[in-house]
Length: 311
Ligand code: GLV
Image (cartoon, rainbow, N blue to C red; front, side, top):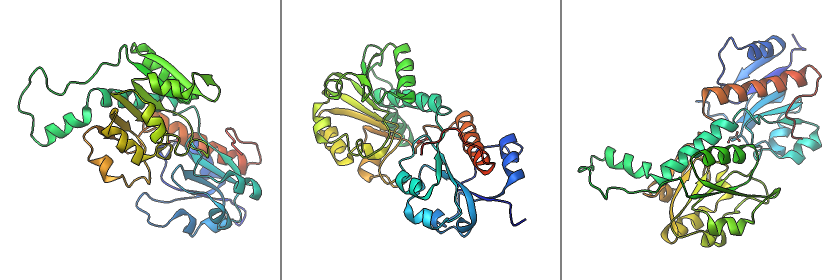
């Protein structure tokens, strides 16, 4: 029994207990699952010192402190496509493999982004608040007018898998789609100046942190909207709130700073629609993410190279 590797899973995965990948993992390892209610930080988890593998969530910081607490660790399988929560240099220095879960959540996140576009353009947040407060006094021609997506320009910032999938769906809705990314498209300033909706789809890293500040918002069109289903820290929230008093008509966000603690000024702003990071929250995407993470662990514990290695 001393040679059975131990695996820590940061939160229960969206897999059936009879899922083949899950059963295969349990066949070769002793698996510990931290409950959703657990208040024990992952870095302080009593099993961490023994584990050969950990399945982390995108919200779990994996830094040198974490790695020091897990001296047996061979792999961090991050249950997310983003891996800004992981110090890759520290993992590399320790020889720990890091994997992510790309592809399987592309469609779910792109669909959610289209939902955010509709929510912003057609004022879903204000409408729901009106209904919940019993403040709807009856239909009239000027009640809560929004704007149509067809014919409007969508500027996509970051054109990886998710950005490209959003572009295809927005194009089918009749939007005029442009993009800007380090790989091509138009200049970011031109995108900001000409787009009615700006949607962020780039990873969070040293270059994109705070990328949307007062300068960028000042360039945006009068009456335009910001959509963010990428990472909260790409946007300077104070600058966003200031822009909402000037040229921005609204914002729809799936992500924000210090999740889950939302800035009360954003929470209560009538023109801001916020979701609790639901981009990949579909049965299909979450099962796909779980299987990729579990399979990466199985491969490494079996001495084979895993798919989706990022370090
Ligand atoms: C979700 O935010 C992810 O990176 O998968």
